[in-house]
Image 1 (cartoon, rainbow, N blue to C red):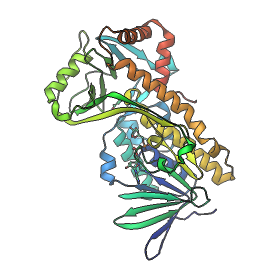
Image 2: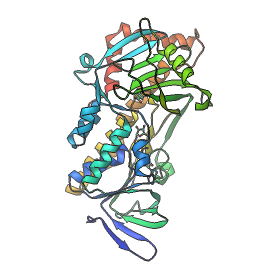
Image 3: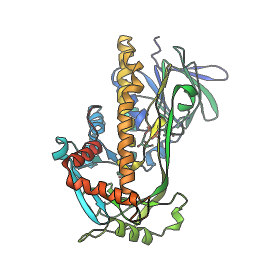
Image 4: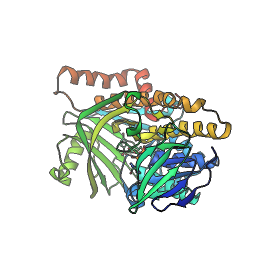
Length: 406
Ligand code: APR
Ligand code: PHB
């Protein structure tokens, strides 16, 4: 199989493109995969059904694990992240006003996290892909896949009302939770796991200096709150709300008041400023336990969603494509499929770990049971244990910064 050149052949009714790896989705997964493959001389085409402006301005989380930062540095796409990203060496955890710091450096042998908005990372990745002549077709929607059990699978897509087809050797579905990739796995090839949480996050971005040098995750009897940031002048904050709640139900003042109560501790004040973005995100844990079928491989949100409480979503997506790129490179360079065969199993170890940690953090910090109930007192006991046990503190620190290998 020597599909190499990205060519376009026109048939009267359909445009035919050829490449080695057809990638669906220009999120962190698809964009990082393309850069890893291109570095080894493997051609790909990225299809993205949204516009460039849309994907570059989509507001999402902004917590990068050390492994993610290391990979982007290795790929030569870290110039702006290294300048503008903020390294954090600890995190504050708070329970009804009692605040405790977990120090990463001491507990994880020097590892840390970097705060850098996902949309900034996506801008950098898109720019690097285009500079390296990797085609990204925006507003191009993959509609269906064919021949996945053959050596020449096909992606059908639509762009500007025209029908297109990509003939390739492999399809990488990096197309997020709502993508088409997962729908092409045989139904009996995987188990699905899902938790829908009975609460959501109302997130804001505000033009105001952060009120804390490090993130604060807070349980409060009125509900969870998180203090994060984007820069020295932009704060990112969240509060737990009901699933039925609407952004319109909250004035800016009410949001700030609620944040001040939930995050509050003695001697600390919350800086307030103009809010320029507000949105509500539901919380779910979701995954399937098989991420491949024939020549189709899934990566990132296409295969798993974690609640944002551990900041793992983006990092898991990048960890998947590291495995996928390595496996595809082994196939193209040596015609060996050992790593392709073990792809799902290799990814799943880290996915399960991240699912567990994200679920743990979610239950620890959200209000689910009445104040003073058995469940609530267990929550409090778990929080107190962080202060009592170095082992528990280390468990949180090493999962939060992300295990180096797993
Ligand atoms: N055709 C083309 N593109 C598609 C299609 C399709 N049929 N379906 C989805 N897409 C695109 C989406 O528009 C989106 O830009 O796939 C992209 C998937 O990107 P992400 O949702 O960012 O997923 P991923 O790259 O796995 O990154 C995971 O993103 O969802 C966040 O917070 C999550 O941080 C995590 C990270
Ligand atoms: C964010 O900065 O948006 C953020 C940080 C940590 C999280 C979730 C979101 O756990």
